[in-house]
Every structure is written in structure tokens, then in C-alpha cells.
Length: 67
Image 1 (cartoon, rainbow, N blue to C red):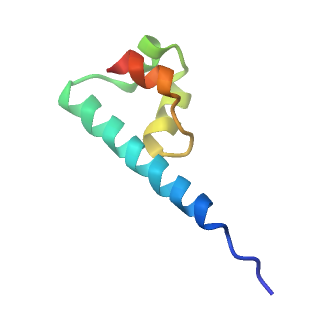
Image 2: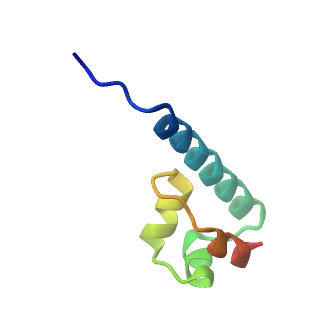
């Protein structure tokens, strides 16, 4: 029998994807590159890319820097 994934993990996935999509939209509207924003918040380009893809969740402190 397969184990069911927890409902919370699915909600986390959806939340991460939504935040990542919003980061992408805002970046495009402001005509910035991932590299520029990664430098502003002090992470690598790869890490910033993971934030936009929703693979990793960006911290609140890093969101405040971008605000």
C-alpha cells in the first residue's frame, strides 16, 4: 500500500510555486535579471532560480530586501 503524502506538504508546494511565480512576474515587470536580484539579496543565481521555480522557499528577510 502506498503512503499518502501529507496535505501540508501539498499546500507547501502550492505556496512555494505561487511565491516563485510572483517573484518572476515582479522581476519581469521591473526588467531585472536573476543575477541582479540574486546580488541584491546576497544569494547565488542558482539559488534565486530555485526561488522562482518554487523549489526552495525564499525567507521573509530576503523578501523584505526586495520589497
